[in-house]
Amino acid sequence: MVVSFRFNHQFLTSFLITITIATLKSVHTTTTTNTEFVKSSCTFTTYPRLCFASLSTQATLIQTSPKLMAHAALNITLASAKSTSAMMVRLSSNVQLKPREVSAMRDCVEELGDTLEELRKSIGEMGQLSGSNYEVYINDIQTWVSAALTDENTCTDGFEGDDMNGKVKVFVRGRILVVAQLTSNALALINHFASIHG
Ligand SMILES: *[C@@H]1O[C@H](CO)[C@@H](O)[C@H](O)[C@H]1NC(C)=O
Image (cartoon, rainbow, N blue to C red; front, top):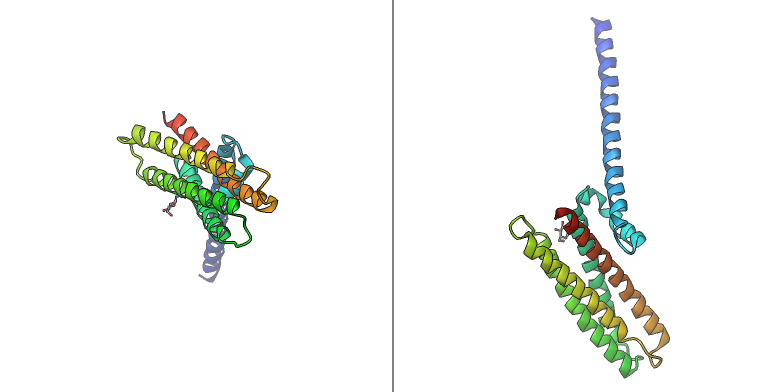
């Protein structure tokens, strides 16, 4: 009786350990698969390193879905555009800026406002994409995200010219550049999703 209990106990323990290891291995494999998916999807973008850096943390959510990948890319782009816009609003009230710089900053905030609107609309339709509205919605999204990219470039153009403060110019252009690269990546991922969806 005692021997048999001991045998069962040992058997149960090793059985549980085996199960635990198998589960951990499978969780690990899934995580690796998801991360690999993000990495390979990023090869469709113009800025793959920025793509991976910004989206690898979302791998668990994205799993291996091209649609969720595009959706997550839009989410990240919106968050970045929002914080950049807020930063520009704060900067535009800086008393040390020249009138020319303040005006470029205000124009830029307005263009970023359009960008935010276009990204929000795109995210809204991305979340509601279905078989029946697919054609119309994917078209809307491609149009809006392209428009967002144009607005961002218009903003940067406002900071051209030698009469602008060098530091302000470099700082603003650097921030907008990141938003524009994230937008370009999101558009590439949307186009990729559309191309395999047919
Ligand atoms: C995108 O953001 C929305 C709203 O915050 C969230 O509900 C959704 O899960 C996000 N989707 C992805 C794929 O990141």
